[in-house]
Amino acid sequence: MAAKGKITINQGLCKACELCLTVCPDEAIRLSEGLNEKGYHPAETAKDSCKGCALCAVMCPEAAIEVCRG
Image (cartoon, rainbow, N blue to C red; front, side, top):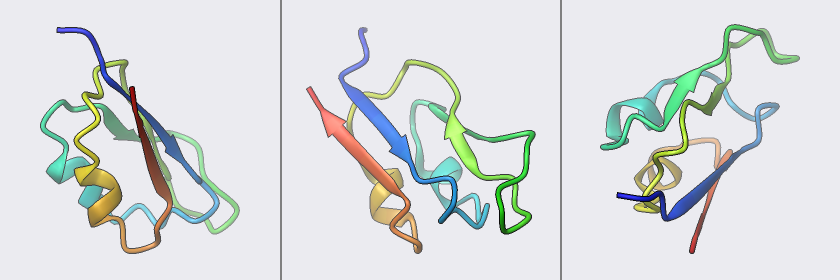
């Protein structure tokens, strides 16, 4: 099935809590190998499999994730 969503993550806000990783049914998010300015490994898009459910955005306590459906 083709992807239906696009994830945008503000890596500067991300604190690597991993809540988005645990709720994503499509494994479309992973932690980056690099560090952000706060010293965390921020979340990033893992693959183009997002279906637009936006569970990651709902779970993010920092409001660092936006999902565009389309």
